[in-house]
Length: 502
Ligand code: AHR
Image 1 (cartoon, rainbow, N blue to C red):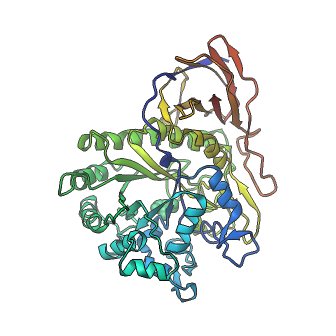
Image 2: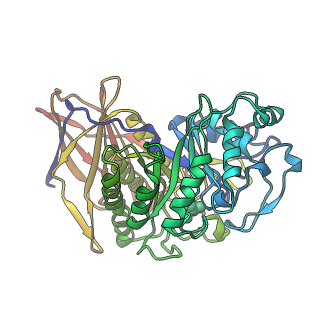
Image 3: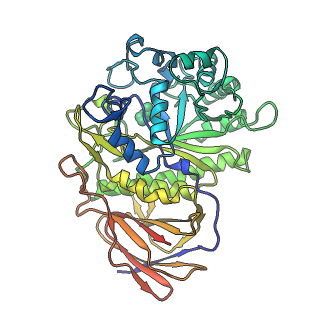
């Protein structure tokens, strides 16, 4: 087996990897909020003020930096006033986007921000542009962030005296589609208008994210940067511009028809190749943004990404429930590697979605108490070491693969230098059949034996279920050999690994 060489520039620390690229997303969709994160105070499932304790603990463990809410498409149909005040008096509405079920607004602003405090993450609130008004969004910001005034008094009367000082605000979601079917030109104008009234309050400066492009819609990015980057007094009016891209096998056609667990070699490669398109998309959107903003003042915010398969048989198709396998673990690692490699511009990203929906990090039993962590959760646990660290360049001579006319790497790697001086390396082997033999060298550092972990499975279709919750987890990686100035490791087929050099 030929050995690929990876040279890590350990003595040349680069830009900081923003911890917010490891963010998550929780929409009022299927069993993500209700019967997922939220079980309600009266539930036999152990909870704190309605939020299930085991899930909160699992999210704390992977150091979730931010959680986006309430959508997604739900956001542009959501009116925040319906989710405050006594629960019994909150309106009940049909969730028109997702499954046609009754939304009783049991989870609103106070509940969600309590969840973020329990997890220890920043909230990222998505405001309503499509069916809302600048006044409605302005008042939501004021309700959350103002220390005094009528809305602060109302917040206090509802149980919260101190402002939450929410920093991250989305100004609409997918406004080219479910958020109002707008043109780029129309939305850019709306963005300017809404952003004007999305105000900073004393001690609560906010970070506005404009609704961005889908896939390779570079025109959208171009128009937003052209029309909305420069504010009236010179500074950028946009702190972030979003991008949404999902991995939809077998060929990106809609509705998604790929099977989450029953796939052959072609099905594995489809996901690798379509997933790696994110690299070209980030590169493309970065190039457009660079033209208007060469100093990268505005971040590219990839606030929806992940795999999207046909829904699990027997579930409500509007709930977007899908199983997952080690294939999704490798897909997650590829994405995180892309974001790290572009961390000069990509400073926030959100996996869709936290629990029970799309590429979730956990599943909860319907109406029951069991919880299972997915292979993707284990990837986030390995990658947490990169949060806030300085990126190190990795030069690799690993081969490139081609499938369906698309390129993707045989081995993808990232490295960073942590504040405690440790070098953390993350690697994935995209080949589901062959192991990958690697030799790593760290410039400016003597080779030492790393702590090595790996996420792998006996078959590419393996995943975690309620009956077998630990089929795919991080385990010690055996066979690490120190040879002269290099460290030799062999990654099992279709796997994700981490090496920590203390
Ligand atoms: O994550 C599911 C949906 O995908 C979101 O609501 C929407 O923004 C996107 O199209």
